[in-house]
Image (tube, rainbow, N blue to C red; front, side, top):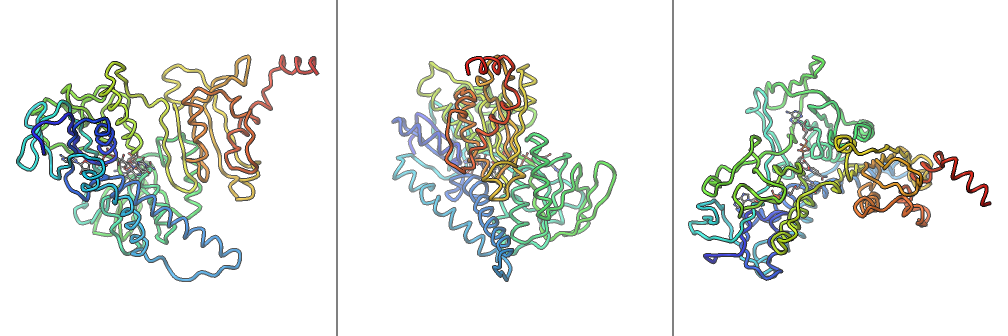
Length: 482
Ligand SMILES: Cc1cc2nc3c(=O)[nH]c(=O)nc-3n(C[C@H](O)[C@H](O)[C@H](O)COP(=O)(O)OP(=O)(O)OC[C@H]3O[C@@H](n4cnc5c(N)ncnc54)[C@H](O)[C@@H]3O)c2cc1C
Ligand SMILES: NC(=O)c1ccc[n+]([C@@H]2O[C@H](COP(=O)([O-])OP(=O)(O)OC[C@H]3O[C@@H](n4cnc5c(N)ncnc54)[C@H](O)[C@@H]3O)[C@@H](O)[C@H]2O)c1
């Protein structure tokens, strides 16, 4: 480790890896720090996106195998969770081969230090008893799961995403507290692997960051698979290690006997061991780093990216690709400060990887209303789509927020939307591009989709919307020209 660097990056998760590798490739000296070599890759690799998506992949295979019994296939036996988790670990190891300290030193030419970093001055940190400084420092220190609070909780081994992937025995009854993307993805994975699953959510619907109609459609599908939902509800107490007492907003009480409980309640922050005060770095009233939209802390030489950037005025986004967005903004501002880019989530997107997936992009109806932007919501059910018919997905649906039809309805632009469908995260990609690039709906109408690709729904929605809305003046002109 040198005494001075161009840049120090603390935390080697999605954010830290992106910032440090990019800056090093531009020829700057970079020190990357993480607490532990086996935490490199952060939550995404170690206990977030990668293990959860690997688990969902196996659970989908199990589900499809069960569906195939309708056609004469005989299945017997139960899922061996130890083997499933072995698969999950093997997939993580594939990624770990290029996300580890030695690889980053040898191939990416980064200085990598393993230890806990804390501040001793505005541009100086201490790690493993040594001090080092940099022109700028980026905090990519992530976030932690919110703890479950309820009377008697101390008797219970409450799992979080940090521990659930170490289970070797399939829970007979898994209680999940929190109905956000983490809870809902795990609910479906474990249900399909064979557990009974109960989900308790504070709010009156699952995935409350999605439009209500999307939440409702997914909930209906999941309930159809046997997941039990207790919404507008709260775990009030645990009377022993396996018994929870839950109360709904309407006063109803439920007792759930479970063998494992998973808390998926959102994120929190812990900067206790970082001595932020020594660098003049302030937190806001929610314990998040106080940031501006250039991701700069109250110390002009210290920045944040990834989950640690949740306090930015643009809002909270806890995603690996948000970390990537923050990293590219910081790198752009470091190397071309003249442009001084600000953070915006106007074209941001995300996917909940249930089956069906829920994919959302652009601005929401609430954001458009707050900004006084006129829009219409167009709903498109997949019931007449031939691909949806042959694959029995006619329940799928999309809702797009579009500019109101003006004189030329083909000029309308897509402002945002949500799709609930198998592979919605892939299907929605061209809508995201149209939204980002300001393409009008004529771009879809002018495209011939190979039959029967699922993404043809991105054209069908406009054909359907236009069919019933061709202005009279246009019809008169057509008749006259014909
Ligand atoms: C179950 C689950 C599933 C998810 N699925 C998805 C998904 O499908 N798609 C998606 O986009 N997002 C997903 N996410 C969110 C995603 O995992 C996170 O947003 C992302 O990993 C955050 O990356 P980060 O670099 O900000 O932080 P982290 O990955 O948390 O990395 C922070 C690193 O900083 C280190 N660190 C902290 N403090 C110090 C210190 N003082 N000194 C040294 N090192 C320190 C930590 O050891 C850690 O390695 C999921 C999250 C969870 C929990
Ligand atoms: N596919 C993906 O991209 C993906 C998957 C999983 C997680 N993530 C990310 O990880 C982050 C964390 O996920 P999450 O689902 O834990 O958080 P979340 O904040 O999205 O959802 C947590 C939910 O738990 C509820 N809740 C909080 N306290 C509660 C209590 N005591 N009882 C009942 N309900 C309670 C909240 O109202 C909220 O609906 C998310 O913000 C998301 O961005 C992403």
